[in-house]
Image (tube, rainbow, N blue to C red; front, top):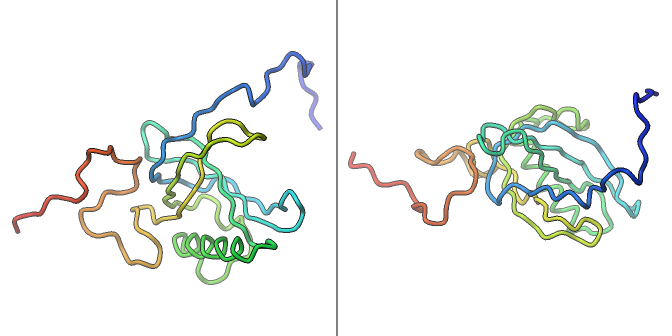
Length: 171
């Protein structure tokens, strides 16, 4: 227990719903896993691995946090199947292929994540990020081999007018 050097009163403090924190734009980011936990669903009928990702190597968003959940048990078999596939991707990317039973093993691992921006909910009215894919730090998908030569490393989303492929080299 720690004694604070000041007394706080609830009526004098703002509420988190009053502070709009803009999510990072949709795109692909290189991140480091900086927090893990095993949590029980709100209904108490399942479990998920909670991950805190910290953006690295991105001048504009370096240090920003993005959170994700990997379902490991749930009454919905589809949710479990998706979670198992996500966990399989993460384990391949991080090199934890010889058995995994402690979320602490994921700490400080580097990977890429693809995120989108989703609208808020009545409980959490602000827009937020949702992780839609786990990638190697160079941006290629697990199970598909290395990224083709000339492909950029993980980065924020390219502008809409950016060329779709690298120019062909004459040699």
